[in-house]
Image (cartoon, rainbow, N blue to C red; front, side, top):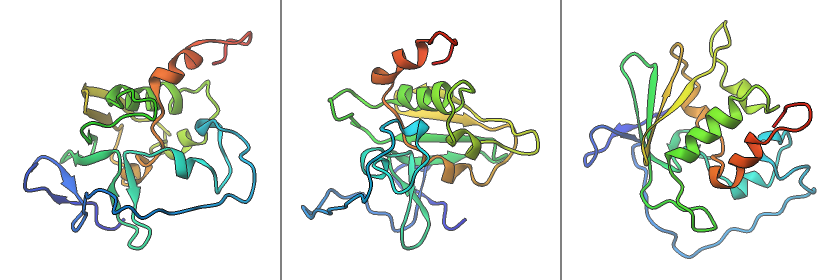
Length: 186
């Protein structure tokens, strides 16, 4: 799985990949072009690649394109319990959505519990989160505004990589998820 992290000196309770630098942009820009029209702007329902979502959403973690190591994204660090059943992520301080609304643990819990793990929403993300022969799903729990804990039914090494799924804005999508159509589907 590659390097999953080293203990940070300033935060001994969190892991962060060795050599990871968290500095601001140097002002350089990258231009990327999609060669087809997006089939949907709904991340949870998207099944195409490449897609616009690589450019518009971020997960808790990401993958270094050269080393394939897991690196921080929205989460500044994470902690894995000794029994490998609890993954606790600490979000970066001061995260905001493009509309200025704060991005908090509420968004992470909403994204996972209400969208990805919701059997009534047909998303392929859920399949990447199924664990073991019973195909059980993890649960997300808010600890505070910046921390969220995932509780797994059994140890699952790919979970850290799966935490790269895009986090969605609860303040924009909660009503749509809670509103049911005539077939009682979100």
